[in-house]
Image (cartoon, rainbow, N blue to C red):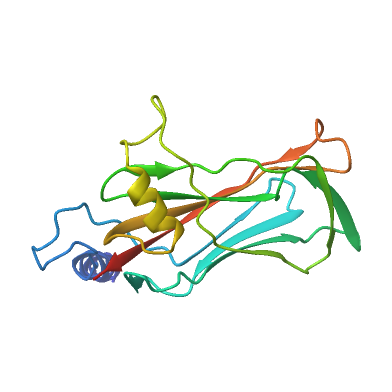
Length: 192
């Protein structure tokens, strides 16, 4: 009886391994590496007070189609609300063209700001391209001002992209204490 039970478990394990799925591109017409698509990702801080979610409505967009991507920062702690301090926004959304290895960084454009987060009411930020010009020593490969302007107009060239969402804020009014840095990312493709 024991041998029959072991044989059944081994057979089930073998079947599960054999039925695995793959995300490799089988069409053979792609010159870029194929990344796993993540349309919704979420992270929590160590203390379980904050949730940070990044969402893309679709895994594939057409060139020129508006990107439906948003980030949500929620306070889920014990208080009714909490005050945070941050620069332009507590959320940064950075863009990378994975196909061409172009990384577009964002710059801070405002001084210290205070925001009150109510419990379970998300602070929502819609995606807007905010990349700056490439400079020597910046991460990724160099890109032209023409490419930068196209992307600023929402005309992303075909390829795979990653939007990396980051939070950077402090709890309370003192920006130097108790900083909360969460990070998550999503990957999508743009096609002709």
